Amino acid sequence: MEVIFIKDLKHQGKTGQIKTVKDGYAENFLIKNGYAVIKNKETMKKLQQMQHKKEAEEQNQKTQAQKLKQELDNLILEFKVKTGQGDKVFGSISIKQIKDELQKKNYQIDKSQIEISSPITSLGFHNVKINLYSKIVATIKVHVIK
Image 1 (cartoon, helix red, strand yellow):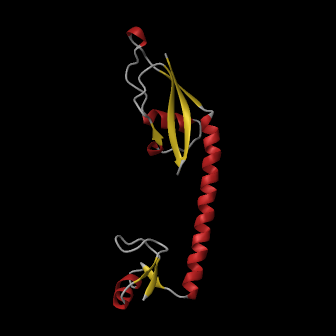
Image 2 (cartoon, helix red, strand yellow):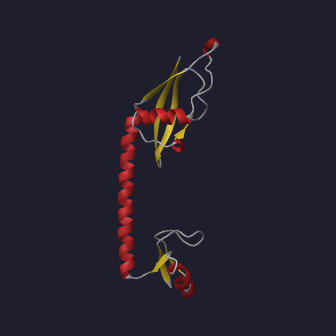
């Protein structure tokens, strides 16, 4: 029996995947527990509609990410820090501090999207990457001053 998965099921199938399974397994487990539906013209039509909707949504997210990238590429965040002898910075600028500063400027960026290659422990300009979407990465400048 051919079924269309409507929920992800570990080691069995992902949403939208069409798979041939045994009749008893399909009826007594997959369909009964809401993981899949029987493949027919009606369910195929619904699957295609769902895929078109998902593609349009992904395209919209990608467009928004590109707009946000253009804004963030021109952004400079300033952090005032205490320094010791020889302008040595006490501590470092953390991902959380960068996230908080971005939120103050009305950018909703998650901590997991911010990528720092090495700790920011010196004065001057530093580049920080922000992963906005698959293969769309913005680079903001962090300016550390005393």
